[in-house]
Picture 1: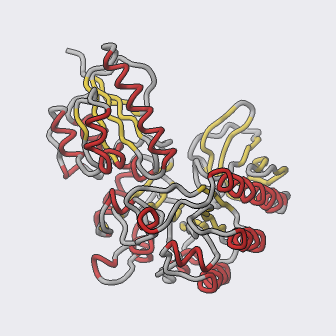
Picture 2: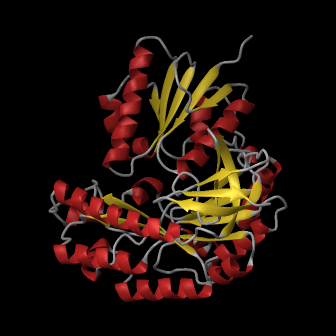
Length: 432
């Protein structure tokens, strides 16, 4: 008898991806044939793991639900289920507006979803995720939720308060990943700066990173999303001294003008932010800083924006993303302020920041010409092998287009001499 086939479709961030990987593993143990983000129809069941962060992400999730609802009405798929942040936040509305979905679940209802598909959810195997990334890198989600109260952010409404996972559990999961061939570990959470505080009253990120670095097979460890307030300075010596920890720090700052930071409830000032950046660069020489900025927050003036633009120009971040503000129901900003920056002004400001960052990125990349870097190979495209340095995270940062006289394989490390540079990508040749 042929196995039933389920397609799990993931929208949004890498934290959602980890949830999908756990679900895929449970369903596969329950004798389903599982696929991830597969095209086409003919599935006995489809599970859509949605994103509910900002307007564009919500709309993309809704459009995906509607597409599969149409396919279900035509008899092209069997059951249709929706989970994740969007249905956590808007379940009643979705049930009314798109009743074709067989059932909606929240973000943390993996056991219930498995039960709906006649699978007994086994918590003993939650570490044994079905890896959907290339086998040489994987995400390690170390906590759920967020204790911050940033004015623009709806995530705590969907994920609840911060809940850290114990170090022993995370080391166990890392060992499993390493045995599956994972060499690069991307440590993720909504806020790494809070890790461990709920468990023992102090940040334990340094202890965690040290523990997982001792797992054989793990060669690179990368940190995503440390907030500037309550920053865990104990992680800096680990980044400097542990050769497995990439000199790469993803720290979303959102803004720099004090009036905007205050209205955003960021609990940090411009002076404190600048002192933090200075200390990070002093303690971890050569560190690559990645950040995210938000423009068009209620009350942002032309002077506030100019302060942000000047700050970016002077600081010269290695990596930077920018989002126009989205007025999200239930947030502090939605309750407190009018959405008073016109959409066209938001977009113009975002475009200006990205144009500035594009020029900075080009100049920083040009400085790398002639230097040698350790590169991990991700794949081959056309005449090039595509890889990354320790200063580049997969899917969000630049890449190195590598020429090699010998065949290379995904997950292989090699020394590459940089021979050319564009705004985001580098070109190089294998030297050994």
